Amino acid sequence: LYFMIEKAMYGLFESGRLWYAHVKNFLTTKCGLRQIETDPCVFTRRSKEGKVMAVALLYVDDIAVSTAEDEYWDHFVKRLNEQYSIGSNTINEGSDITYLGMEIYQKRDEGVIHLTQERYLGKLLLSWRVDGNYRSPHGSELFDLGEHIIEDEQTRNRFRSNVMKIAYLAHRTRPDILLTCNFLSSQITRTTAKSLRDLDRVLNYLSNTRGR
Image (cartoon, rainbow, N blue to C red; front, top):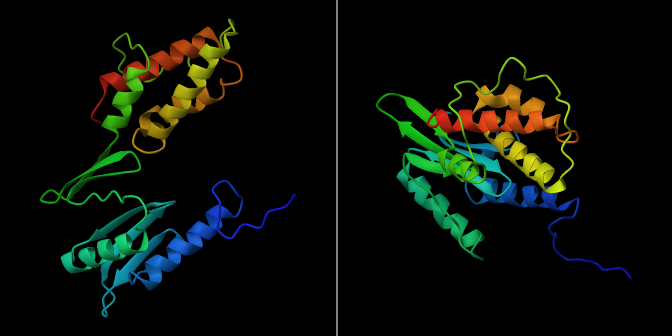
């Protein structure tokens, strides 16, 4: 039995490519943006003199737009709501926004942009009992493999889940835990009691260094 589908269906191999082509066409034809040569997910709007007036970043279906032109921002939001009117479009605007699970705070007078994932980290810490007062993400014995292998599947699944969650932090806003996270990732198929202690330590460290 065969079916011929008329639209891209979530989960098909070509769906991601079709969506990208669709949203790229929207950004370039409806929003007056142009794709840059060095990154297919970055689009800019320039003045006649070549000055960058707006920048749009695309991550699947999350778009971040930076512009100092209120008129263009209103135009972009109007076009976005016209194009994607099914469901609700979550729009954050102002100097403090959220994007891809990150909170982005801008201090324009100081020329500083601060990235954090405090909300994401708070939810993560609720799922794991954190004890101790560690000030570093790992000890000198990090690369010791440990002997006692965990057989309980529920415990191993919980370990895997939390390692993947801290990986999201490590690759975005907490590079200080990247080494620990990479090693813990190698322990997913061979989880030991030491693996659990190492995970507990890095989560404790994250709890004690919130706000970085």
